Image (cartoon, rainbow, N blue to C red; front, side, top):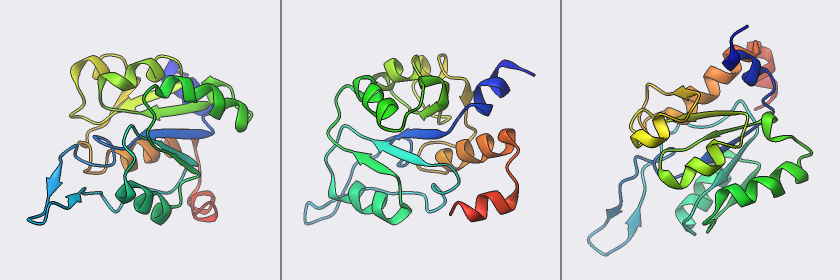
Amino acid sequence: MNQNLTKIKKIKLLLSDVDGVLTDGGMYYSNSGEFLKKFNTRDAFGIPTILITRENSIIVKKRAAKIKVKELFSGIMEKEKLLEKISKKYNLSFSEIAYIGDDLNDLKIIKKIGFSASPNDAVNYVRKNVDYICKCNGGNGALREFIDYIILKKGFSLDDIINNL
């Protein structure tokens, strides 16, 4: 069994960055100055997921509620420090937690968790330090791809997936 498969088999919880993973990282403003974000509708379901973001955005809160994530942590500047709290709260070791991120502020948490990924368009330093690089870019299905990859490698059946929706 290869090293990635060994790591994936342990995964029970997925943590995800928001900007650059669930979104394309772009900042969109309407003529009235309203701030907008684009999300991919398929980025959800399959594995218990927690979102972690530096921003404190109502848009992200609405998206998190829509896709029914376990938790959303907003305004987090040092994500790796939150990892300890999440680990204790859910009674999981770091090796049982996966993470997907795209930028330098994700590197510390990427180096601590059990299995890591990045969108295809993540910065090179992140791409060089993750276990899996998605074919999809951020905001274009990268989270869905990562979830599907884990589900496939863990050997979940379609019934398992449907029952966990």
